[in-house]
Image 1 (cartoon, helix red, strand yellow):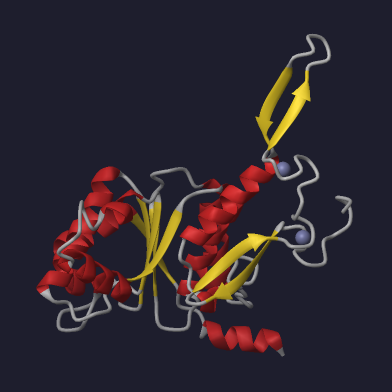
Image 2 (spheres, helix red, strand yellow):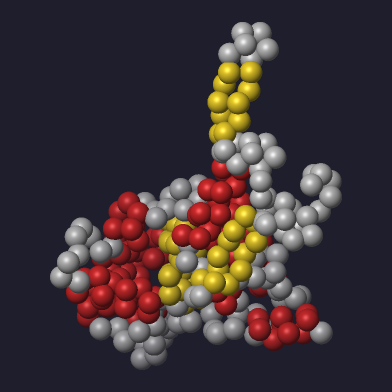
Length: 266
Ligand SMILES: [Zn+2]
Ligand SMILES: [Zn+2]
């Protein structure tokens, strides 16, 4: 395949992403990335120094591509968001959504470990999860960053299982604390029991202390007048004040994003 011709299978992205079970799964493009022409799939290139005649061994560029595929597959992005990218986020003419996409793009392009995260808040259907997934995809596929996506209620169920496992060794939170970018979708869902708030506090405090980047979405308003449900009330003052320090709060209001998408499809 010559580089100036676009691969009909992957459009020269070198990989394809498909839903497999619950998650989006990436593989090398079967048309243009099978049988690496540079290294014959050994993973290494040997070059001979013309002056000294010595052979030098260097990793082939295809190894970096495989690393990015691996980072994508470890992200556990939900399969229903297989096609969610920054490009496929359609803000229509809504200024708020246009702005949000531009900021998400800037964040993903300029990310350095420990960068301040984002907390997207707004009603259902404004595209919060799409943006979250698109950022992670960009970080994994374009930048090779290790990322992890988890829905808040799945996180609770997962932790409940791990804390309750009599055979467990080590800290059940360890991998969620260590991943350089963690995205938590639908923060504040769940029953809000003392146990749930306890594990949330522990996870957020540990990531905060380690200076790691965390992204969130929530349907709850960050703060509201007394007597109504808000994120602040739901997670408690201590967690909320950490969130304020760790994240830029981004409101996603706009029109119903799903309706905007449907109109664009017409
Ligand atoms: Zn291809
Ligand atoms: Zn190669």
